[in-house]
Image (cartoon, rainbow, N blue to C red):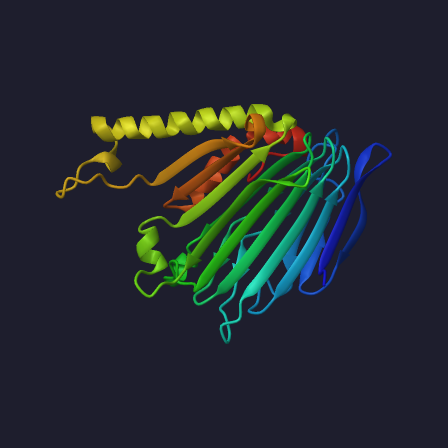
Length: 293
């Protein structure tokens, strides 16, 4: 059963929440206006009662973005997933339809899983050839201040994009404690894993810019490793390079490179926030305020 549904439609030439429904444990906050009054955009904040997702919670949300509408789906803070009781798995399902010439920017803060947590999320986006979509999906290693680093039992994130009902982008991230190696051993020093998806004609310039920036950043980092200009690039005694604190890659997908996906592994959450703020700055003209300020 649905725990939340929002429909955004054009009313008097403005993007407007036409219908909104939510029930425990989900709640929506929809401010009257965010940012410049000249920008036509609806902002939707999602939150859960109790400040996080409790063991066994099952949240199913549907979002419909009408033709020509602009919507931002975000959070007020990181999504906390509390410890699992009796090995119960918490679940979230988000199903979105993005209309013609519409824009959805899903810009949440990261997921933070507590020790022993079990969490699975699935996001399905149905778009048209001229729809516009931004999705940020990321996770931190846990509560650093409590000494928890990749100490949860299970994290699974599925993202599916369908273009005109045909599969366009299918991606799954699975982090699970294993009998041979732990998540901590596999992730090593990296504390954040992130993915950014951009697609649609209104985002073309941002797509081009972010690909150029990622290429430049990684080229400079690699060059610094070999020239010895970076403190992180010095050779260790075993002749292996110290791992860089921030790694990013980008690639296009879909017909004629309609979409771009950027993947990130970083040592600090702050460095990912900074990257998102800088690389998605061009969204300000579309959504009213700079993302992740």
